[in-house]
Every structure is written in C-alpha cells, then in structure tokens.
Length: 311
Image (cartoon, rainbow, N blue to C red; front, side):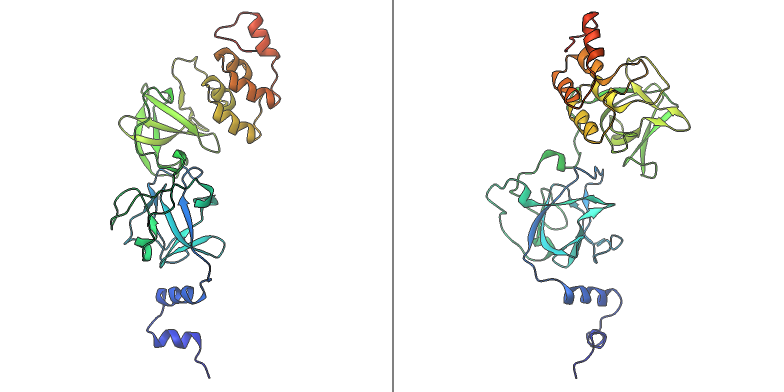
C-alpha cells in the first residue's frame, strides 16, 4: 500500500510552509518555460520593481531576494491562472487586477536572450546589479514599461501652482499611498500623466522627485491649478485640461474611456475650442472623429480668437 501524501511529507521532515512548497512542486504543471517582461505601463507604480514570492500568495514575499526591476525579463512556467513560477519562486501576473507581467513574445527580439541560467538568479535578466550580478536583457523594451528613475526632460510637463496650504506627494495615486513629501502654497510643480480616475497626476518636484499629487479635494477644494491661468474653484475637467496642454495622447485615452468630448471648462470652453486655439491639428482631428462639436471653434476663428486657430 502506497503511503499517503501527508505521511511522505512527514518522512521528509516537511511541515507548514515547507509542506506547502512541496505540494506546489508536486502539483506543478509540466509546461515549457516562457519569457515575460515586468511591465509598469498600467500599474504606474513608483516602486522599482516586484519582489518574488516564496509561495503563490501576494503576502509571501521572499525578503532575501531584491525586487526585480520593471523592464526586466523573467523566464518561468505559468502556474494556475495568475502566477509565474520562476525557479523556486513565484511572480504575480497581476497586482490589484492590473497586469504586471507581459509575454515577451509581444515585444521585438534582438537576437534572443543571451543565455539561460540556473535557479531564480539564472532565470531573471535585469539591467542593474542585485544580490547576484545580472546581465541586461537583449529584448528591446518600450520606454513606458521602465520605472521613472531619472529627471524629466527640460521643459517637459505642465507647470502648476500649489493653491492650498500644502499638497502631499504620494508614492501612488491614492490617499492610502505612502507620503513622500509636500509642496507649500505658492510653490510650483510639474505635472505629467493622469491616473485612471483623473483625480491624480504624476508630478515632479526638484526636492521630492517623482510622485503623485491630487488636483482637487472633495473637502478642501482646489489643490493645484495651471500656472498663469485664471483661478477657478471648480474642479478641473480632464478633457479640457488635456486639450489646453496639447496632450493628444491623453485625449485619445480619455476618448477611449468614454469621457464627454463636449465638456466645458470654468470659462465655457470645450476641448475643441481649446485645441483649436493652440493650433493643435492632431487633437482637433481626434476630437472631431469622436463627435466633438466644431461650431464653437469655427466661431472663434471667425472672431479672430487668440492663437493659431484650426478649424
């Protein structure tokens, strides 16, 4: 009579986490290894990467291992529907429902991986040094996948002024995210992309570095406003702000989310009017294709409105 599985584990001196790990090993599917990229383009985390897990449980971090940087590649075996088994460790395919591992087959290859190695250290390619030396991957990664670890280009972003007593810079677009510092009233910061809720924007401050700041607070009112613009306590309208800043990429994203292309700002201007006043042909085309009303922009052109009006 064959001994039971529990008895076998006891004979091997395994219990608790060891038994769980052994059970995982016994039941692991026999599938060929695949290469994945750690992708930060949707999660937009300020963390440098993802720490491997000892077990397929988001709470079971392998603290002895350094986080694997976003933009790196890992090679392992898909485990269940939500994990990748890499050596004796696990990486989540999603965090809070957001994909963080993308099949490398979706990216362009440049000669393939340089070599395959043993264990966790051997199945991770990453472009910086960790607990053990690592080599850069030969996969070409889209820039958006990489973490924000350098200063923004000179003149990039939109200048905003702090109009409340202070605005906290957080590690993520959430009031529950760790605070990294704050900017006081009268200071200026540079803002970049919006989060999915459009309540937050990624920010850069010379003293704090990268973070996320809230634009309007439901209790305290406006927190940040465009530098040099007429002040309004009315919450900012993302479509109008994106059009006024010439952010065609964000307009495209907002349109895909189903936002109102004929929304108006505090001055009654639509995204089409704001884009036309900038002479932003691409944004005007995107808005027109999405059904935006061009009549107001045409009227502005007829009145000889400010800027290089496009109709």
